[in-house]
Amino acid sequence: MLRVLAVDDEVPALEELAYLLRQDDRIEHVATAADGVTALQDMVQMIGGGERLDGVFLDIRMPGLDGLDLARLVGGFPSPPRLVFVTAHEECAVQAFDLEAVDYLLKPVRAERLSEAVRRLEAAASPAAEPGHDDVIPVELGGRTRFVPQQAVWFAEAKGDYVRLHTVDGSYLVRMSLAALERRWSEAGFIRIHRSTLVSARHVSELRFEGGRVTLTVGTETLQVSRRHSRQVREQLVRQHRGVIS
Image (cartoon, rainbow, N blue to C red; front, top):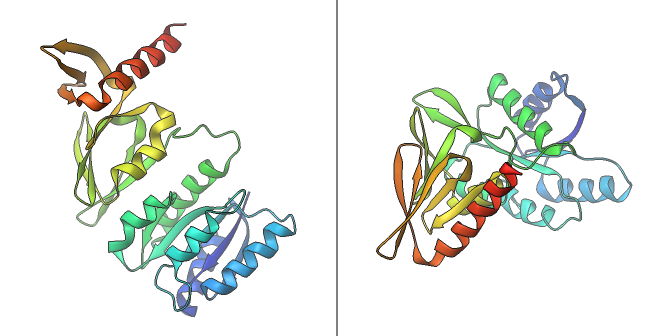
């Protein structure tokens, strides 16, 4: 059961979010705060008093201490709670995921979308959870949300402020940075082969050296490894597949 804090300076939005969270059987307790300063004080008091705080559902645009600044402060806690951003501002997604947010919800919040965020928060907060295990990236597709599982992704490419996820079923564009995705999935076997490419080691079927060039076969694609990353990629692939064989 999760104990969470909801933070929003708009009272109707805060009350609606708290109501929806309290309807979820996975949520044990919901505290609320109407601004960033109060939220920070509440978190310090909770955690300092030995009270468990698993997650914070956090608005971004707030007067005074805004959500992104609050998240940076929370990141300095010895055992920081997980973050879920809830906002009307789509353009802050990259910064949110750089702060290792579990999820990023756009207002108005739909109950089914919030339920998925709680599922991801529960998985991230569980001591038994393996990093990157069963992680899912939500992708908005013309009014629909498709959930792309980490295990289905062959590789990811940086596209400006976005990342394109390549899978057997096609590719999906999601607004986040490749650096944030690398931190999130590195322990699940995703390795950097180029400044703009992250590859799933489980889907690598061949490593090839030709004329000083290093390439990988990933799914049905052939990808070039940069000179800077070639040695690290080779060592990491050998180490990982040796562990599977043993």
